[in-house]
Image (cartoon, rainbow, N blue to C red):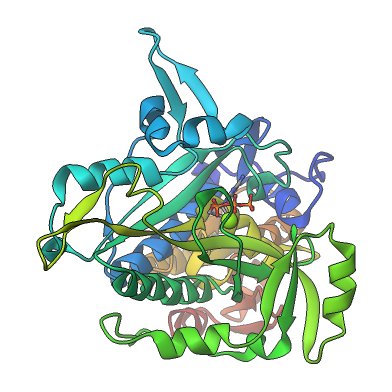
Length: 439
Ligand code: ATP
Ligand code: MG
């Protein structure tokens, strides 16, 4: 992408409305624009990151055997009356009436709809297990939308739903999602800690929240320090095998979230050995709730004995849009964002310090063509901005590599190569810089 043709409205001033780093940086880096409280337009740079995060989530769901579909944002109120949640959900649900006076709602989650789809087509245990997921916008009319994409009203969520014939198989499906979660957060450069959780309005007794540690997090967390050193399962993890040793290793040590207001408990927990207290951001939650929805919604399957039984369900959410903020909270410095490579909007920034200078233009075009061909998604700053502005903007948007091309260096056939994360700079010939980036 050539910056002169792109749409990157970088802000020089820090927007006053942003209270936390990630929100501030997303606004300054031209990623995001608020359209209403908790409702955002994702500008091109933000959109690229959102799509990368979404794709990592998708790949790990697919790897774990889940199957993607797409359910609508609008749902019929009557469907939610079947489960009893239409009234129970309260003011967080955005309720809508169409021209025929039919009651609709903007989905805050999809347990009811997926149970409705399931019961229409699946009737025998022989068709199980199944795990269906989608990545779709949700709406929750949060009392206090804040912190940008961290607590929006409209937000992008991946939600997966597992269906099994009995509880034991249901727990095996839960374990698959648990391991997939460990992998997908690690792929984004995040350390996410699973913590035993209350299941809240979703229901059921087995639940974990996945929490990224960050100063600005809304959850108070208490954990055994040794949690931080556990190894995340590699790409070779076999989801058909027994995953319980992995689950055991990741749930054996103490890790829990508590209500921040519960000050007493806060004090008491800190006294225990090896324990640290911190704050964190909930980036995902898993639930196994058995027949909580399948009973009222009559989603049954016949078992090996020919007798019908309610299907055993779990649900598994990841806050895709919240993750973009969480990654920034976990990875930034004074100058701006530091994207982990797998989610970076572009892989490399090429800075042309003197646009119009034949040698500079030529070197930049060579770099641009080579990096594009290598799949590195370069962003070429070919604007007339002053060098200081170009450096600041490139640091702010946080691409992993910078290739800096100026007339002085080129008289010696040299460019500068900068690593955004460490700040390390090297002066070297262009082809060597390209080699270093392409590996
Ligand atoms: P929270 O406790 O933060 O309100 P939740 O427990 O109500 O979240 P879940 O129903 O578990 O949320 O939804 C799954 C995931 O969706 C959460 O783990 C979180 O990452 C994300 N999420 C939930 N609410 C929001 C929101 N208002 N804005 C952005 N992401 C959200
Ligand atoms: Mg939750």
